[in-house]
Image: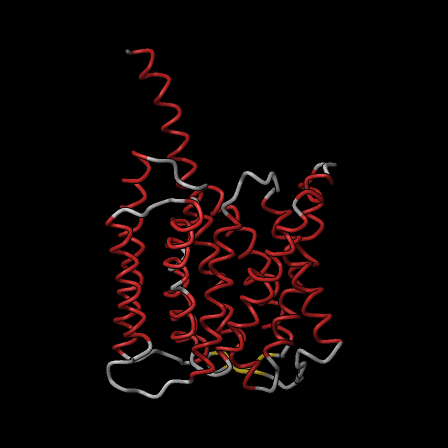
Length: 324
């Protein structure tokens, strides 16, 4: 019995360390992703189209991450060929669609509500794992999803009869689908793709797809070279574009995939709800946008799902394997 205990202890310690590192990656990803709306909003107001901002952002990130993605393969190009379809799906939905839809939403509504709608994605992940893989959520996890749904009602301010930008809400829901895809694919370790390779492949695919749509005229491309203001200070237009590419894309996607591999898609998606808090903070600090009190209350309810699902994951972990 003593020998068995000694054998189990290192495994438990390794699992805890893996979870702690995964949580750190998830928080870095969430905080950096949260900057994207605040960085993009003044550019959109200055005349940039959502397509142009998305293409430049993803293109810069692809240039930075692609060399590291190739190195991570370590001379195994067959791994990438076998997963070509997965990388294509990731690039189309988790990168191109998610970011274009989000920036299209931000062009029509404030950053905070757009983020809060997008980050109902964890509930979609729970439902997908249940329907597709039979990962039946426990009552605590379902409670978290219910809190998120109630929070969404408050974020949309439906109870007061406030006017909504329907196109903005629909674009934000489109971003939610892309976001859910991002969490599910990022957490899949069975494909053998290194995290950096998956991130690089998705960013390259996203850049090519958006570039092709722009070339044939299906994606409006407008740019401006006027200065933009953040927190009352004007900066050259190219500074926020660099930030969008390097910080809110290259850093965010790579750390997000690393988090998903360690935490699993369900838990990673709920921890990533901290992006909402980060996004609201950055929007308030940089562009003086702050949701109404009822919307903030809705955000609190959505974020309460993080705690509920984390508790639910611990319960599931004792009885059945968690996707990771």
